[in-house]
Length: 605
Image (cartoon, rainbow, N blue to C red):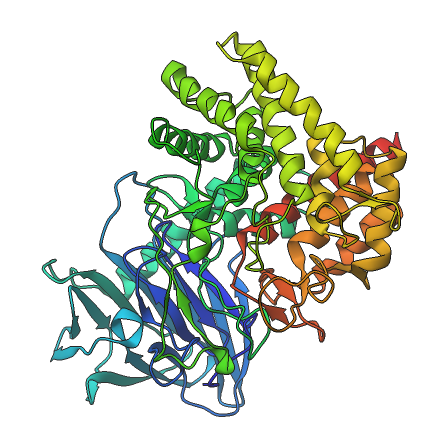
């Protein structure tokens, strides 16, 4: 087991309330319970010695590891090939689609030999509360019980376990066709022990999980050229969504670096209004109307929550249950991935002012009649109050989409999305005949357009730029043609697209911006942003530059990991960086695929 395998060297499994990462060496090195944003139980990815892990792999030093998903599912298969034999470990969690959260979550692992004879070793070393809390071990014939503060881990296995300090270890030798199982259940300290399991019962649950995922994916209406990548992205978005509320987290992890050894190590286990709102479009492109509708309910609830409270109408991010409190703390005791410190839990960016979120929220609520506005009369009144507030506040400097910590500025993207907010709110008001201060909203919308084209335009670059009075390019503006702020083939937009290609594109990969030219308050550099590369594909396709769009899209496939997953960024050597897997990357992949498919079909006539 490597101390720190590459970030991309993992597959994701989950039960729609939490998730785990499994390395290609058979180690669960990231798992939180009972929710995505709960303290970790296994976190060796952030500290090999203190974080904890759950290893199940051949007891061999010369095995070759391969990993894949069972077709069209969230069931992960890790294969080990050695001269003595070939073995497999199958990992999954049973999907829980209930709207009621549960404190009980189980990682299921079936191990089997498919050729020769394979000796497997199990090591289970939980470390509760991000590795800060000690636990007591109660080893019984039916399994091991790890008692932590307020939480208990139950380990069941179909083969004997032995004590290793306060952890456990076990081995099992399997011949061709033989199987064994192990299951780790995290639950409330006072919760009952899980029922006994057999290998046969666990295998039956495996096929139930396969059926669940394949039946869910069968409802997708995507029939385009890139079905394998789009389907994997859809499953990934589903795995990153908290089923009780329909809120997606930005990523399954926290603290993974945007630059190895650097300080850009954030906690992404929360729901951003921006990411979630754009996911509505991706879900609708695939025909997942129920999931899109559920998020619009969640979004409407957030607007109603603040309807009578002075100040900003929306916070940029929330916990998956809508809780707005995300206090950031530094976990000083953790080494960090390959020494990347500080390791942060919580996210102080929740307190930032980012005015673009109103545009993304309204974009989500107006993208399709299939979703419509689900908020009713009182929900509309809350939405209208938010737009009235925005009419008085859209011209305030803010921190911008990238959550920089270098001070507030007049970010062009924020202004563009405020335009979107008023444009879509006016459309809703007219289409649904709802009461609204349409004169105020219209004035604000038109004023923003004039101001952006005047103050957000750089004569030097012949492009719209990151903030007023500057010349720095910013890839967030690649959303302009999608939201119809400018026509995708208008001279001003094509000139902006050309400038981005000169300044932000490197071998088809796209940087967010140049932090050296526009200091963001943080040390170090970062890789290209995969979200931005897919937004670039989308913009190229809309501009009619289909040859470049398709080649860029196809090249991005080569940066996916071995099971089709993407982190946040691509490093200088093609490595994946940042929290993993990232929902924003996968939803933008779906959006780009849909746009490019449509454009290519039109070209064919």
